[in-house]
Length: 507
Image (cartoon, rainbow, N blue to C red):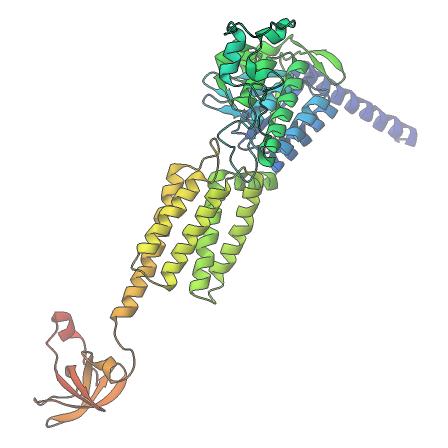
């Protein structure tokens, strides 16, 4: 008989055996993977709030989980400065080393992407990629063509500087020598009595100068923190210079050029970096990498923030609203247009755009709407299409330009919509009167009753008294020749083809 004590010992033994087997399996798995893991994150597209939220969250999570490495694959034209700083703050606060990798081949890391690369503990690029062009672009307008401040001191012209390098001897012999050597070498324009001072900067130029100087200081601080080329970084901000992967490696802008993730992991192994908690030596051999994707909402918002998607949404919004105004009560076009307008405005909020391009798009849409209400046989409508297409081209600055194929498709669809409007207008002007006696002239009908040269015919569903110079029979097809009051003069219509003969005649 099995006692209670025996059962307790049996189940206890089974529990201990199960725990031992579980621990052995975990140990074997740890030995096979080395107990090391890392994550791969992606920055593909503009640096927007959804992208910043995704990267900051996953960097913080990986750091809290003590991952071995965080790799950010980058292919971006740039983006918002606030979103960029959110990502950089997460990188600087991470206790897990962060490596940025401009990949795949043909990718780029421009503008905000360069700042993120400079903040990373390890910065790498794939062959045939490029980086740079980090001049700030204000949201709502493109940068001015000229720098808001001179590289030279105010009040110095280029001629003055050349004269300062090669002083000219005094002429006339009457001028007393100056005891100060610096004053002797200085050109006349720099002396106190006739020194010229440049005009103060305008408000817009002063603001832009502050933004550029702040950006220069920011990227130089990152460069000094990571030991990278600060002078080139400054030129990338001031002069928008750009370099290839190999040039970036030679200039000390990046640390590595790697063909793929495996090559990057191999080259990073053994490298010592400074993280938030202190120095750390990377051990990237046999690290298990896990790719972490953004959430569905973040993917949708990032998709909307694409320049091509943004202009498509604004075009759909314009089309829907125009249709709703042209045919009130349609509801569906108006609802779709309003939803697309909301999403398009969100995209324009997170993208650097040019007010001129946006204004041109609005003027073009207004001209198309004018064509619908006051027809000019396509002249104003075609001009509106051209203006709208040019606005699509210039609405975003270089690096965010809308694809030519997208612009062509939008203009073609808008042209088709305009053609439908013109067709409807021409049709409405050519069909003639719709009611009254004039409406039945030249229409066809069927004889209902007939006696001699007079009778009754059915025309467009109406019963008319008719007369004809020839006798007719019920069912004959007739055509209206003229209308005299409530009496129509008809003639027998020509016989139709074989199909008309086979069809039964109406009574």
